Structures are given as structure tokens and as C-alpha cells.
Image (cartoon, rainbow, N blue to C red; front, side, top):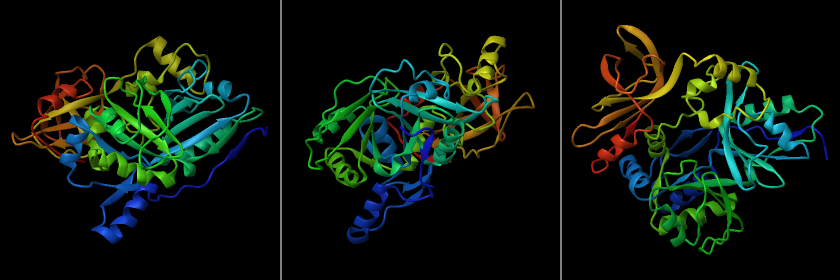
Length: 388
């Protein structure tokens, strides 16, 4: 076994395998699908209207491109011990075919990236956004010294689709992909019986156990066939606009937007990424010091505006004429009754109490508990959608 080897290709912004296939098809069959850069790759912005697509993801079943996700494989006898010393969550006790969400920190406890790490038996596999790939692998490379660890970028050999909504499992079954009851972030090697004849298809249950959401990992050559099979079974194609709206109303922070390198783990409120019993890892001293001495001063939370208002990222949050935070993401859900604006951002902890009134660019907003499920459920009969 080679020691400390890192193999990867420099990634430039490029179309996902699915988007390449869709462009080739529409070149002959119809107008091209609008596309935009999203999380490190170019993918479809929308297929019909973001309103219809978001509604399907929320109330029915939507299928979307996850080709902006990267995959890294770790092999070697020291891989588990080494990785456990690199990230904020516990890999050492991770069951086979299960994953865990974690942060990668610098020695000062600042967040370099986020990822999901899966124990696949003979390997550990890391899933992150393509926009984070180069930094993640360079950081891994920096810390491999005399360890029996080999890090390989396998992103070019895999791509993924997402399927979300209460009807997702039934739609997958109708498409020939029978999914058993899975725990959050549990994987399953599915034998497809659909027309796509996938050679290999790995199904992953989403992290939120209250929602029906799945990832399908498969070879790039099979992604368009599988997409067609899932759509034919009843899923609504969804683009990045609807996917981003879903992310915001679910209160899930995005690295590069809501989580930055200057942020500390406890400020993000993503405690699911932290394990305080696993022992040492890079940045652990700072994380433990915060836990033992008291909370950080800021917190990541939601804000709700009654009405459709365009809120610019970076807008300052004001309370009592004092600046107490800033906006990191915002989305507008427009309805026949006027709609609501959903905002994510940081606020000083003593002010960030659900129900507290604050001001964003002269507009009144209310601090809200994440996710915004109750509000969205109340508006589900009406519809949506624009995002900023």
C-alpha cells in the first residue's frame, strides 16, 4: 500500500453529466433547458416553473440533478483512525453502510468545509460539493504524513440524482428501484429492474428522518436513462431554483453562503456535525473550549417576513437601532394572499429568541425557529416561488 498518496484532477466549472445529456437531447427535440452554476457545476435552473417544481418536492415527488456533488474514496489500514482525527464527527464507531455529517476545521477551529462520510466497509467515502473539492483534498494531503491512507477523487466515475417528497419511495418502486426502509444516511445497493438497466445503483436515505428523500448514486453513462425512468414513473423534474428554495425553508445552511471559513461550528447551530466523545481532531481544542466555557455570541437562525420582499444577501439585521446580525440566504414564497419571505442568517444570541421582532433593510421581520415547516404547511395550498 502506498503511503500518503493523493490523486485528483483539477476541477473547473463544467456541466454535470445529466445536464450534458439533457442539452444533447433538447438540441434535437426542443428548446434548451435554462442552466446556471450551482455549488461547483453547471446544471438546470428550472424545467417548468420553480413554483410547480417546489410544490412537487414539498407535496408529491421531485427528481433533480446532484451532479454538483463530489466523491472522494479513502483506503489504507489507517483510514479510520486518520479520518477520525480530521473531522468533527465520529467515524471510528460508524456502522458499515451508514454515513455521518461533519465539518473539516483548521487548527483555529474555523470551518474549512462540510461533508458526509460513509463507511463502505473496505473504504471510507466522502461526499461534498464540487466547489469544495480542491480545498478538501489539499487539506487531506497536508495532514497525511506517515499514515497508511490513500485519497482518491472518484467524482468522474459517479454522479447522482435526488428524489424528494412524500411520494418518493412509491415513485422509485414504480421506476423499478425498490427501496427498503432505511435509516437516515444509510446506503443500500439497489438492483434496478427498470428500463435503465443500471449496472450499479446505490440508494442513500436523506439525513432528515422526518422526510422522504433519497440520493441515487450511479455511473454517469446511466444517469439520463435513470432520470427518464423516474420521470416516467411520476416524478416532476426540478431545477436548482426549486432545490435552493427547499434548502432555505428547511433551514439547511450551505457552505460558501451560510457557512464561511470565518465561522465557528457552534455558531452554525449544526450540532449534528459535532461529537464530544471521540477524542482529538484538528480544531478540537477550540470546539471543546467553547463548549466548556459557554456559548459563542452569534447563532445561525431563521427570520420570517410577512409578505413578498426581496432581501439582499449581506443585509444587516437591526434590533433597537443596533446592528445585531446579517442575512446569508433568502427566498420568497409568493401566494395569492401575498406570500412570505424566508431568511437565513446570523444574529447575536441574546437577541435571537424565536418571536423577537427585528428589522431588515427597514422591513419588519420575526426571528423564527428552523425549519420553517409550520409556516410552509400553512401555505401549501397556495404557491410560490422566487429566490435570491
